[in-house]
Length: 302
Figure 1 (cartoon, rainbow, N blue to C red):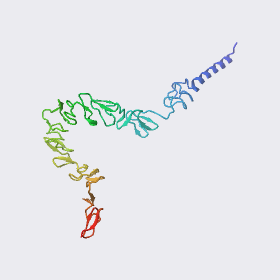
Figure 2 (tube, rainbow, N blue to C red):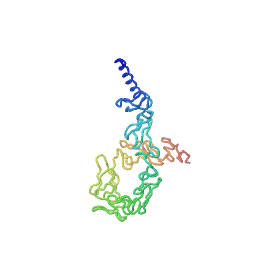
Figure 3 (tube, rainbow, N blue to C red):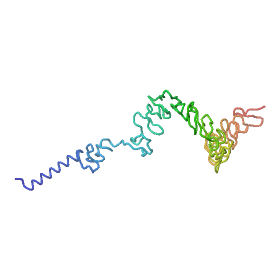
Figure 4 (cartoon, rainbow, N blue to C red):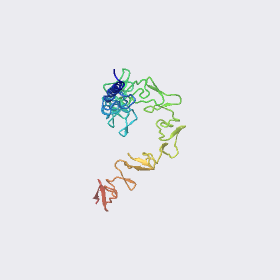
């Protein structure tokens, strides 16, 4: 008959054996303990084992997937992208565009390229397919019904503005006129793009009673066009002074060519270095007396 001591020993061995099977091999373990085991496939733990389990208990721990907006390697992934080893990437078969990942073979807003829309049509194998009643108006408009499209009414690109399109003709509301082209219907008394007359643009200003109204810090350039001379690169410092690709800071052009093609600024004055005898070939290069500047070279004028 077994003694009390032998029963205690047998019970202890049973407990130790069960613990070894459930913890060390990764097949069980405490579900509240992160890891489950020490070397197995992850067990029931929340993050897997330390050598066999990654983020989900089955990987290597080097690849993780993030939700949109979560930083990845110092950048933020676009919609549809995943983060792998610190770099954002789209899934296989998708292309990275400026707004996310897209299937260019089937996406109607990104058909064949990131910037091509099919409008009211469908995208098949990267090509827009228009219905019989639709017209292909190119990558900007896609497939449209010229009889009813407010952006292509009667013909591609013919916008109705604030109006609507019926039977291929723009229908303007009371108080509006049809300015045609890409302007369409406009209220000439309040439309800043057609103020007082079709196409009369108020620029940065507003339109009231058919007159352009410039805000504080703006001046009227030309026919009522409002411009902020301190920051407008097309009217920098004065009306019509174009920075030609540069920016305007406190009324001064920064970068670009403020004098335009074929001209160079020398001491604030625009000149043609190919024929200016005071700045021949370079600013400050003065041609000698009786010499003229031809093709940026000083030559004897006789």
